[in-house]
Image (cartoon, rainbow, N blue to C red):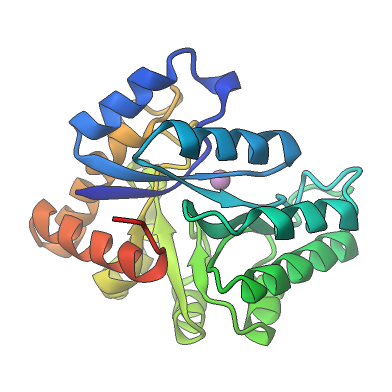
Length: 252
Ligand code: NI
């Protein structure tokens, strides 16, 4: 069994969610962690985990979705994490890509959500874009563990994150032509620190690049990692699923 440790299966992107789930199962992807990013999507996550056996959830507020967010939303997060199918706080983090970014506000909500994760003894799923050093500094100060999703930093930083208890989420980007950086990371990091993810609906792997991604494509990513590592795809399946189970507390 494969696990898609990071995706956004929101209604607005998929016309037939039953089919998306069936396709995943058909392709041996039997656990899927759907991440929230704002109030609307967090509520969808709570519905999806009720509806589908294979779907587990992460709740959180994404760094570029903080408009109008206050401590009230943090209270809502705190109140909704005690659900046996919520396995993480995410997607949270820092994103300095856009000029108008309020970095202090992002850092405040990142730290607050880390505290909430800690209180509930949950791992975190972290987004970091053009902000790797600040992400590292904040995570280092916190004793929470988790995943750097869609890892895009250097090999040196990857090693530093691993030292403080983080794993690296790897997705469709490794199938792209210009994936030199992440391929260098994968070649030099043990398979035990790598998690599979699609980030659906974004970042579909080749040959589906540019189309709507779905959890069913996880084996394509696994097969690319297997080729890079010179191991079988079933070895990638066994190790990455074992790692995911060590981080996230799935019911079964
Ligand atoms: Ni994401």
